[in-house]
Image (cartoon, rainbow, N blue to C red):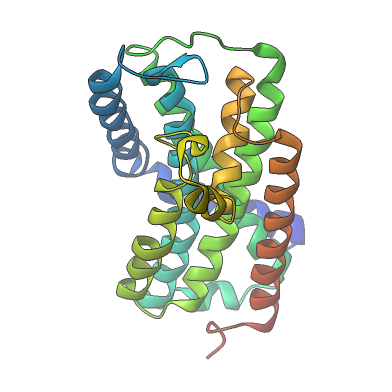
Amino acid sequence: MSATLGLRTLLRKEILRFWKVAFQTIAAPVLTAVLYLLIFGHVLEGRLEVHGLAYGTFLLPGLVMMSVLQNAFANSSSSLIQSKVTGNLVFLLLTPLDARAWYLAYVGAAIVRGLAVGLGVGLVALWFVPWQGLQWAHLPWALAFGLLGAGLMGSLGLIAGLWADKFDQLAAFQNFVVVPATMLAGVFYSVDGLPRFWWGVSHLNPFFFMVDGFRFGFFGVSDTNPWISLGVVGLAFLAVASIALRLLHTGYKIRH
C-alpha cells in the first residue's frame, strides 16, 4: 500500500465517520449557533451597534467561526479517543502509515467538518440576518482564518485525543479549555469595550485573533490589525501542529 493511497483511505474513513451521522455532527451544531443568533440578535437588534454594524450582523461571523473551531476540535479528538477506548486503534498501528499521514488524515477531516458546519451556519443565518456591509474584496482573509483556525483546532483535538485515556478527560479538556476560550474570544462583543485589564487578557487568547481576523474578512472591521492576527494564528498553528506531529511520531499513549 502506497503512502498516498493509505492517506487517502484514512482521510476518507474519517470524513465518512462524521458524515454518516451528519444530523448529529453537522445539523445539531448549526441549530445551536442559529439559536444563539436568534436569541442575542433579536434581543439586541436595533438597540446596539458595534463598529457601525447592526448587532446581528456583527454577531454572525463570530458565531460561524466559533462553530468552525469547536467542531474541528471535536472531530479529531472524539475520533481518536473513540478508537483508543474501543481498541480498534490497533488496526491503524498495523499499517505502514507514518505520523504525517495520521496527522493529515485526522486534521484534514477536522477541517472538512469545521468548514461544513460553518458554511451551514452562514447559509441558515441568511434567513434571519442579511449580510449587510459584506466586502467581497476581503473574503480571502475569511478563508485564510477559517482554514488556519480549523487546522489549529484539529491539531489541538489530536493532542487532546492522544492525552485523554477516557471520554471524561476529553470532556473536561473541551469544557474547561476550548469552550471558555472560544466564548471569550470576542464572538458576542467587541473587546474594545472591555476594561483595560480584560482587554489585555483577551489579547493573550489566540482564539480572539481567529475570530477578529475572520470578522475582518467579511466586513473590513476588526479590533486589531488583521496582519497581526494572521501572524499570531499562523504561529499558533505551527506550534500546535509541531507538538501533535511529535506526539504521533513518538507514539505517545498509543503504542502500549
